[in-house]
Image (tube, rainbow, N blue to C red):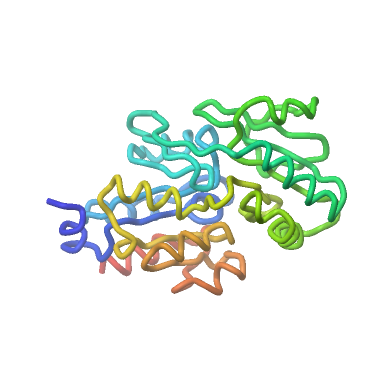
Amino acid sequence: MSTESSAAAGFPYQLIATDLDGTLLRGDGSVSGRTRDALAAATAAGAAHLVVTGRSVPWTVHILEDLGYEGLAVCGQGSQIYDAGQRRLLTSVTLDRQLAGVALAKIEAEVGPLHLAASRDGLDGDVLVGPGYAPAGHLPAIPLTDAADLWSAPLNKIYIQHPTLSDDELTEVAQRVAGGFVTAVMAGAGIVELLPLGLTKATGLSLAARRLGAKAAGTIAFGDMPNDIPMFAWSAHGVAMANAHDDLRAVADEVTASNEDDGIAAVLERLLG
C-alpha cells in the first residue's frame, strides 16, 4: 500500500514533521509518554514521522535512539539527511568558508566583535566553542582556542552571539548586511546561526519527503522558532507550539499547547479522532 493511500485511510496526512527543541522535546530533553503514544498511533495509521531539527547529527543521534527512531532525520537546519536505521549520512551541505568569513566581517563591521561557535560536518563532527560564547544546554563541545581552527575543516554552520544585542536584533543585522553571503536564522534562545546561502529546513524536508514518497500537500509540521517558518511555508499545515516565537505564531495555521503540555499529542489525538 502506498504512503499516500494508507495515510488517507487512517490519518489525514502522509508526513508528520517535528522540530525537536521546544517542540517534541520537553525542557528536560525528554519526550512524554503521551506524545510517544500519539506518534505511534499516527504512524500505525499510515503516516511517517520525520524529525526536522537544527541540531547536527552528533547532537541528534542519542534522541533518535531513545525514541527507537529508525527512519530518516533532517538535521543541521536542513543541511543533513541522516538514515537512523542504517546510521548513515545520506546527504550533507557544507558552508562555504570563504563566504562565511566575509559574512562575519560584515556583521562585525556593523556591530563589533562577536562570540563564535561552529559545527563541523560529518557523523562525528565536533562543535567548537570560542571565548565568550555561551552554549545552550549541556551538549558536548570542545574549546576553540586558535581562531584558525574555525576554518580548518568543513562546517555545517557558525553560531554567533553578541554581548549586548538581543537574538532578534542580531539576526536582523546578520540578515541585512550578510544575507547575500549566508542564510542567517534564529533557532532558539541564544542561538543565531549562519548557514549555507539559501539553505532552510524546507530544503532538507523536501528532499527527505521525496525519498519517503510524501508530498508537501500531505505534510503537517510542528515547530517553535523562526527557523521553522520555511518548513511551515512548505507544508500543508503548520502548527506552532504555545511557547513559540511570535514570528512563527504569526504564520502558523494553528497554535497548540506548549512542548511541556503535550502540544503535539493534542493535535495528533484530535486528527486520529
